[in-house]
Image (cartoon, rainbow, N blue to C red; front, side):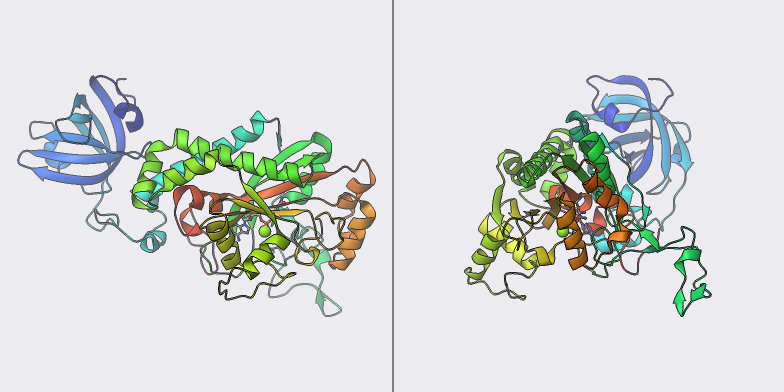
Amino acid sequence: MKSARTRIKDVLACSQPIAEVCVKGWVRTLRRGKGVAFVELNDGSCFASLQVVMEAGMADYETASKIGTGACLAVTGALESSPAKGQTWELKAQKVVVLGDSDAEYPLQKKRHSFEYLRSIAHLRPRSNTFGAVFRMRSALSFAIHRFFQERGFLYVQTPIITANDCEGAGEMFRVTTLDPARPPMENGQVNWGEDFFAERTGLTVSGQLQAELFATAFGDVYTFGPTFRAENSNTSRHAAEFWMIEPEMAFADLAEDCRLGEDFIRYLVRYALEHCREDLAFFNDRIEKGLIDKLEKVADAEFKTMTYTQAVDVLQKSGQHFEFPVEWGHDLQSEHERYLTEKVIDGPVFVTDYPAGIKAFYMRINDDERTVAAMDLLLPRVGEIIGGSQREERKEVLLRRMKESGIAPESLPWYLDIRRWGSCPHAGFGLGFERFLMYVTGMENIRDLIPFPRTPGNAKF
Ligand code: 4AD
Ligand code: MG
């Protein structure tokens, strides 16, 4: 363990003292006493910091004991058991090298900052306790997501980010173009997109689903995990203009199997967090959402409930609860309705299925009643909708009819229709919003605090 850097996480996990070890990290706090200075050094490898003790006899003591909060240090010393309360080890410094100095204007001084303020210094917030924990969770759960699907034999497919198709048909695509906005080529009073880079109108993808479906009809079970973009001008705590989505797609599956996969997936990720992210979860449980760990343990064991949209409307109408938006069959559920169902009626996760065809996307499979589609949303307490999915319309004629009803020209999606022409099969899938899921497992309340550099209306700094 000489000279090479050891991560603080590994140092703190040692079972016995070490004569010489080198750590590198950033100063969280510095306390000076008489002839001694205590530094809390954090390198992001774990929540805890390592206490470094510098004594006056040490070479370079004068320089080292004057560094400021936020400075970057390389410390070599002896790991000894600590007399201080609440920590097993401390590092008796023998040599301290200041790799990067700091000054009194470093914004992350000791006091607690609001999340709003920390968002304005998104380049530094990863060095705070809360955001250290958030981004370690995000990384650990990204790995768990791949592990879940790989263990089940799903193929990982990277679907395009630039696309000509608005999968959800909601008109929320960001445009991608190389045309000069001041002087676009015109034809009959309209912009001639044929002269654009891709010779047609393109944008950033709102979902990888349509392409994932193509792969499902070759590989059976597939999943995507990538960035998704929506120019939704809604300034809520649950919407981001750039977010990450996981979209599994399964050939030969119906809506019930789709829900089963969604439930297994959520419970697997929750268990993974409970097993592998204990230290960070303890912090969230203590400081962000009281009872968080109990809640997660309950979800890891519970069976998710299911109700149809029609039942949900019935329950909401009979609830006697006053809602800002009235509940009426045929209208989409608003987040106040979703939260009432999952928080008050069920008190846990609930799938709502079989929505009216008129409020859902063209690709969802029409049920025998001809009024509803085989769709599902998974609702969770505090967060609301976290998963949206469906069985897909695999019958070519029905799909053509649905496209026409939804105002989608069949000529714009010939490849999507081809899949229904050659070797069509029942298939189903869903999309999980990664940041919304992270809100649920950390207790953090604003989606801007779960993604490293949030993009929302009016904000693309950093
Ligand atoms: O319900 P959505 O729109 O479904 C789809 O995009 C389907 N194509 C998925 C599929 O079947 N393969 O979005 C899926 C999930 C939502 O439930 C939500 O968790 C998340 O994506 N989501 C957002 N997350 C953050 N910010 C936004 N603006 C989001 N819009 C959707
Ligand atoms: Mg949805």
